[in-house]
Amino acid sequence: MQRHVRKAVFPVAGLGTRFLPATKAIPKEVLPLVDRPLIQYAIDEARAAGIDEFIFVTAKGKSALEDYFDSAPELERSLREKNKTDLLAALKPTEVPSGGIAYVRQQEALGLGHAVWCARRLIADEPFAVILPDDVIEADVPCLKQMVDAYAEVRGAVVAAMEVPRAATASYGVLDVASENGQLIRMKGMVEKPKPEAAPSTLAVIGRYILPPSVLETLGQMKRGAGGEVQLTDAIAEEMVEGRPVHGFRFRGRRFDCGSKAGYLQATVAYALSRPDLRDEFAEFLSHTIEMARAAE
Ligand code: UTP
Image (cartoon, rainbow, N blue to C red; front, side, top):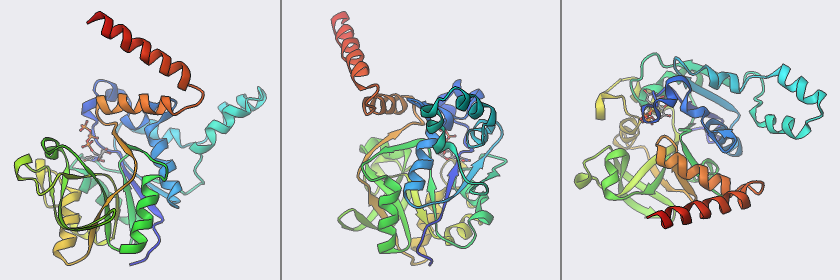
C-alpha cells in the first residue's frame, strides 16, 4: 500500500439534529469556535499532517461551507483599501489552491460509511484520511499528524481512540483489543454502538481515521449496520476479518464533541482561554459568573 497520505475526506452531509434549530439554516460545520468555524480547525489539522487534497461529502443546505472556502474579491478589496492587513491575514487560511478542494453529494443520509463511499472516485486507489469536523482536538502536535506518523510505522488502517465511561460506549464504535504497545492498539474487532454491558472495552473510536482503499470496496456492498445505516466501523472491522491489520491509536490531546451542545460550549471556553487576546478578560468574566451563580444557590 502506498505510504504517503495525501487526501482527506470530510463527511459533512449529516443532518446535525442535535443542534436544531440552529442547523435548520446553517451547517454545524460553520458554527464558530471563537472566530473560526469548526471546518477551519479540521482543514488546518489536515494541512499540518501533509494533506493537500480535500474532499467534502456534502448535502443540500451546505452551500455556506463551499462559500467559506471560495475567494471573496469584494471583501478583500475593501480590506486592502482600508489597509486592514491583520484582517486580510485572518482570511489566508480560508484559501485553498484551485483544484485542491472537491465536493461530492450524498443525496440521502444513509450513514457515515455511505458518505465516505460517495467519495470513492476522488479517493481512487490510495490510503486516505477521514476527519469528522465536529470532533475538535486540542493538541500540541495535531492529532492527524500524530496518526500519519503512526501509520508510516504500522501500515493498514489506524483509528483514533480514547477512553470513555462504560455507559457512553453505546454512542461510539468500540475497540476489541488484541494487544497494546505504547499508543498503538492492535485490534481483533470493532463494534458500533454496543450495549454498554456487552462492549468489548471502553476504548471508543472518535472522528479521525486513516484507511486503505480496500475499505471502499467493503462499503460498496452497502451492508446496513447499527441504526439501519451503512457504518464505517463495520467496513473497518471487515479489514480484520480479511487479515489486514487495524490499529487503534491513543492520541495525545483533548477532544471536544462539538456535535453536542455541551461539548461545543466546553470547546468554546477552552479555545477562548487559549487565546492571548481574550484570555484575561474571559477568565475574569467566567470566575465572576461562577461566583455569582454560587452566591445565588
Ligand atoms: P453524526 O452521527 O454526528 O450525525 O455524524 P449528524 O447528522 O452530523 O448529527 P446529529 O447526530 O443528527 O446531531 C457524524 C459525521 O458523519 C457525517 C456527519 O456530517 C458528521 O460529520 N455523516 C453522517 C454524513 O456525512 N452522512 C451521513 O449519512 C451520516
